[in-house]
Image (cartoon, rainbow over all chains, first blue to last red; front, side, top):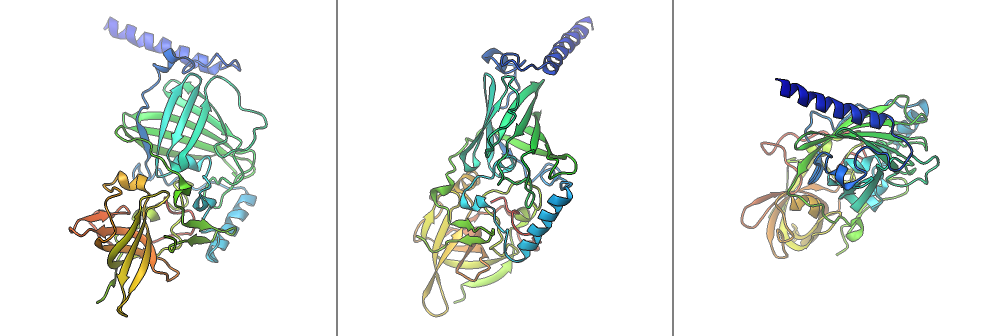
Length: 255
Length: 149
């Protein structure tokens, strides 16, 4: 009994120490409490193997409640839906092999892999052969990042949860079909393993110009320890296309 | 000889489940295909492209004028298919196969592959199939951005 109590106390002390360190997370590049050295990486949760986006199960998790839009964004969505009735907006530029960017790049029907190195979590993404770099070295988000497909991500560990903030999303990325975003869009991800084989991402998107309230959705991934990330070069033999109005094309003649 | 038979959709449930999720819009939507129905197409493989972002199957299909039509049929990516029992050797030129195809809406001789029955009778699913096989066609809502593929 006494032994059990002491183990719990030690755990409690360890957890509170971790929590304090996170709360105090300073700008200094050396102060990140976990994942900043090889020794601390060994204490991180085991996310080895590759993780396949779970769009078939998970209790409809892959179908989150639609976002609450600002009047301006709602107007754009309605125009998008109207255009669809006329054969436009059927395709995005992904049909032309332009990657979708964050956040949709994390929700593709292809697996992802997490690589831990000191001060950084790298996400290798099979779809479009993409890569995300999440800096966990304690740096702050940049004030005025150059927009990019994956945006600029910083993260920190809260116990077994990787908390990631991403800004600087490129204009052409959509939050959902017909829902774009402004340069103030921010994606917060809380990523943790909820079972040995399941990784869960709680995603909260904020954008005062597009969303009237934060858009929260939950996504899950299933672990496949026997899979590898495969090559995906979209330009290898792409016969699909979207024109400037989003009309769909397909070349079935080329041999 | 009748090479085309309209049949019930075997697949499409998955493609229809996505809707406005903001999720899983991978390479392109299925807007140009009739995802509510499949049609049986029987012919001889002339070329099988085991390439990203999609596999492509070309086949010669006898028509009712005594000639053959050249069909081009899109399939899932090699990445997806190789995790679901396929390989680059699954189809080869000269194979006589029967295929369930979601036809192109524009009337050309092409579509998206649902299943292929190989010369030895083995059925290979290209799209995920509904449990229990054939079922009522899945309703397809909205337009662009609904397909994971």
